[in-house]
View 1 (cartoon, rainbow, N blue to C red):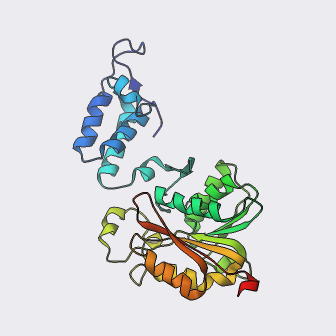
View 2: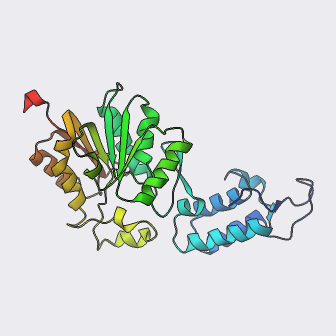
View 3: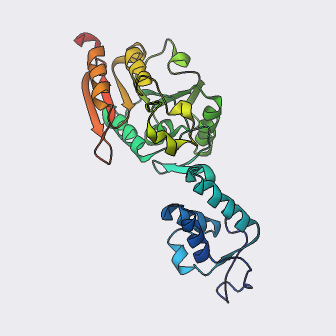
Length: 296
């Protein structure tokens, strides 16, 4: 929605006439009454008025009218129906980068920032080659490119629509040197090797009740067979063919899948296998290093 359109001040706060529309305070109450979480309601109302959340209290008497009011109430209806705030606004912050998001991609989540951290911790700052498999909005690849301009970053995705979102994000952020390739998993990188492969693949089981809260996000980026493990195990199985000697595989997985993923890494021959917790203390990232050639 266009910021600030149709917002008038009451009295002489902004030197204008009193608008006919409801106040920001009233609109906030309207959103909460519709079942919208307070944090999301505050963001929607504040941004409609061209404010941040902190500004709502000081300017709660401002009123919204015209197209801005219509757009705001449309946003209320969408959010009350369960559509993520990120899709309504068309953006989401990840790693302090503002990313475009759409229903073609998953909404980037804070847990995935741990995958970025783990990659930065395990690779030298010197030039490295990294491939983000199933990049979606490009969040992981973009964060790595932002932190390590000297790295060579490749990103793949089976969805052309998702890849278009990722490319637009890269261009807008000035990170256009990332190589984007269309295709499933390792298909676009046959014959190549990387110092690290990173991925946040689908890992939710088809019968998982959590999917009810994710109904607006692309199912193909969420659900995997074999109790959510199929894609994770396939990545572990095939990754060594695409890793340099001493290269790393880093995977995000579900909160209860860490032991299975770690065991698969060990069985496949990876060393230095470790599972890393998310902010809630659940295992969320599994990492393994393919042995040096002279160590095998």
